[in-house]
Image 1: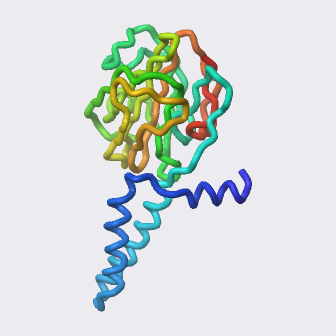
Image 2 (image 1 turned 45 degrees about the vertical axis):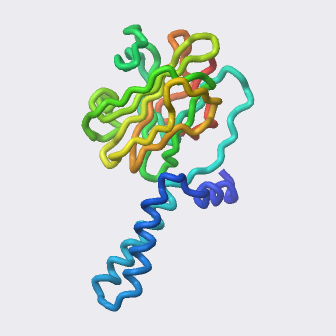
Image 3 (image 1 turned 45 degrees about the horizontal axis):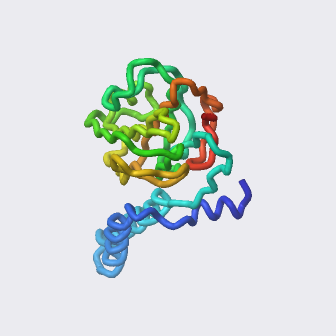
Length: 225
């Protein structure tokens, strides 16, 4: 990645979900520095540091989706922690037959905006309350708080994207609703402060990526459909 590309990534404008955090921490930084007491100045400094962290964490860079048709792209930034055949989440009613699941772990340093891996229609959205284990663990797919989406392609095939909360993450944001249509790479949600995103491919599709590989949400091709 070039220096200019790196700067564009770091200086990208924040996602709208950052507004309450930026307003609160920004106000705390200003008020804390203006008041004369030592403790308020320390709180003001801490608020200023948190303001900078939120600017970085919630950054929402533009992405260039591949022009190639019939590909599934990464739904999130991060690195792949597992690729295995498992049954889709039961709440999505996609059957019990094993399909390829690609799990991407997002650290607090990664962009946390989620993007649609394919063009299609959202035909199921299901939220499941759960624990907040380390999202890099395999059992996080079943035990952690999650929000699962079933997408139906134009040819009728289905795949799933699951937003999973992590050890620090406590809030899953999802703008997608049943019946909504999306294009490949469109934003649909965000997970706050460390998380994981699982992609379940259609039964006849195999992954093109490997464990440990770094993903760029909306750009990296994960599979050909």
